[in-house]
Image 1 (cartoon, rainbow, N blue to C red):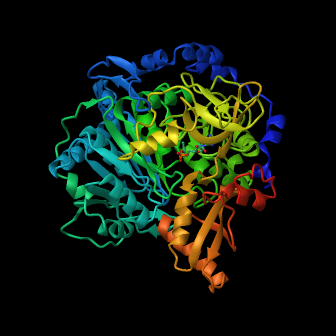
Image 2 (image 1 turned 90 degrees about the horizontal axis):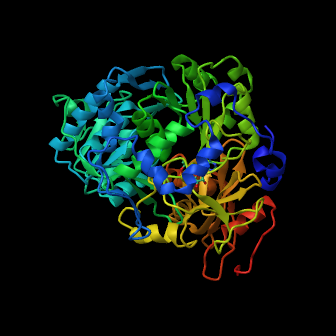
Image 3 (image 1 turned 90 degrees about the vertical axis):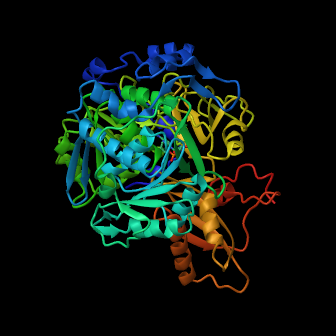
Amino acid sequence: MSKNITRDLTEVLQTEQKKYYPSKKILKNANVPDYEKTLKTANKDTVKFWEKAAEDLIWFKKWNKVLDKKNKPFYKWFVGGKCNLAYNALDRHIEEGKGNKLAIIWEDETGKTKKYTYQALYEEVNKMANALRGIGIKKGDRVAIYMPNIPEIAISMLACLKIGAMHSVVYAGFSAGALEGRIKDARAKILITADGSFRRGKIIDLKKIADEAVKKCKTIKKVIVVKNNQAKIKFNKRRDIWFHDFIKDQSIETKLTKMDAEDPAFVLYTSGTTSKPKGVVHVHGGYSVGVLRTIKWVFDLKGDEIFWCTADPGWITGHSYIIYGPLMAGVTTVMYEGVPDIPTPDRVWKIIEKYNVNVFYTAPTLIRAMMRYGLKWPKKHKMKSLRILGSVGEPINPEAWKWFYNHVGKRRCPIMDTWWQTETGMNMITPLPSAPLKAGSACKPFPGIIADVVDKNGKKVPAGKGGYLIIKNQWPSMIRTIYRNPKRYKKTYWSQVKNAYFTGDVAFKDSDGYFWIQGRTDDVLKIAGHRIGTAEVESAFVSHKSVVEAGVIGIPDNIKGEVIKAFVILKKNVKGTEALKKTLKKLVRKTLGPIAVIADIEFVEKLPKTRSGKIMRRVLKAKELGLPLGDTSSLV
Ligand code: PRX
């Protein structure tokens, strides 16, 4: 593969202006046939737009105010309304007579499959909800979930919501230390996990990691364990209980807790600028509205689709577009617990054909990994069922975009490059199927979202110039606060640019008003689409006795988008050997989990710093990549 991923965005902007228009068939079926007109109408009054969108859901009591701005930036939506996210994802479909429809198709790496109709899922969720109530879990309590991509994770999440508890899902690729930190911050009362999972045929010992994490968590009273891959595990009889035993004798009906629109539904931890992850809080009302409206419009859902999002439920993409979005829209969601190239590099294309997937939503890193195997594999599969493709998690380079368009979508399927964040809850900058596309651009903001590119002072920058990406209005599925840290919420998102939400991303707008996202400002990394804070990685390095200080940066990688390079200052008299590099790499992996792969370590004497002592990662990066150093006035 070429070095395309390192192409400069200003050059991309000039060379990638070709527009890809939707076919007549796509246009004819589009939920939003007139793209520009819809944008215009929605943006005349965004609050009105979102109020109308809320009518797609079932409310137990209607709101009396759509958007409350009294206590900025602690905005409230649909104030006074009563609803429940799980009700809109499950119960309503049963009440509407759609119980026999498939809700989940699950397959694991070994080829084992399971299917749940809406009725079956509803019953399992109710049993779990009753069992949780039975051990004293109640409205407002936090439940930690550390599980692979299996139906039981959806069951557990939905069950929490039914009884008004908040879930805190921790991605199963995180280490014991990372899980422990998140459990402690959320003060979770119980943990739901699994014995293990298969990955490339190897057993991942989830229960062992969970045990290690829970050892130091005083708040955890019970650990509920799904028997998933029959791995041999240690069982603590006083604390642990098998999931199947836990729900065994429970009733298939339960009393649903009616929630206020602003009651929190879940917390999801994500990386930021400090070494402590942020607990992003989303609520029942607005989150439901934003996710349902975006999934229906971006992916053109009518209600009978097979929808496959390849993310993991442990990330926001999984929350919104594997579980809640597809279920609220009443479609069938595919869950695949495995890697994309086992047993052969066409596993993904095979799954699409096997289940007649209509919408395929994935990440650029997966596309680039598949490109490496050559055209032979997608060529074997016609994938006739596909209608819409999606990309998320990091910028998609035009070459990967075109490969995806030509060889997976076979030039029939428009690609929705969706830009958004854990904090935004839903797709924010994205085309709709009726929009003309450009390869590598996330197109324009979703109707009802006003975004812009500005300089440090909040001044709009001209087309073709880079700047900070901001959102100028409020939207229903926005983050409400950082769990137990409202000050950090205010500081991180609402104090950088006046009266705007600060995304932390750098972007360009072209002369057609299309957005081109460049990436994060320099303290958050995106490794294969996974978000990791530089400070988290640095603090893992510094925990080693030989390390004085460390600065880490992301450097471009053709498959993963970015990989980590670390600059490390050692204690006097410690030799920077290859063996020490190995030890440090292992330490970081152990501290953060397998997603934090260190590609390279360089031992240095000094790190570039500002006068106030902050490491200037931007300077490290510019030097490493041979780029101009930019403004160095604050450099000591
Ligand atoms: O930098 C942007 C990048 O991912 C960040 C958000 O990461 P996370 O909260 O983990 O959520 C990922 C999935 C929504 C953003 O600040 N990002 C996400 N989608 C895109 C993207 N960058 C470019 N293009 C995208 N489509």
